[in-house]
Image 1: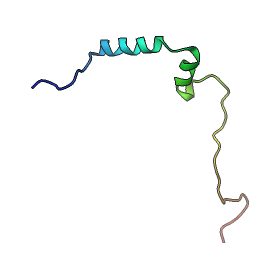
Image 2 (image 1 turned 120 degrees about the vertical axis):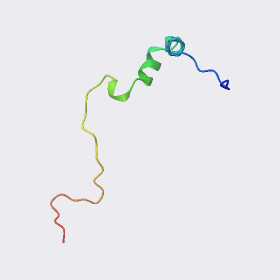
Image 3 (image 1 turned 45 degrees about the vertical axis):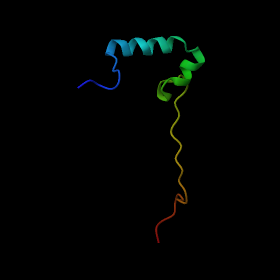
Image 4 (image 1 turned 180 degrees about the vertical axis):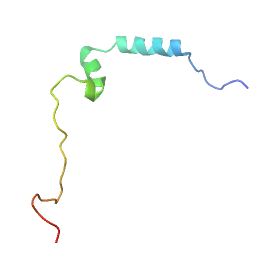
Length: 59
């Protein structure tokens, strides 16, 4: 049965991705970079404690 859509080969897919990325500006490239690969200093994640109070013991 013929497929109702076109499925590119892995090589065609990689070539199309490379052509798209080639048009990106440096700012666009940084914006699309995974957040954990972006340059900058590491910081501990912030956690919302809600109503939890340090030093309180359950009653």
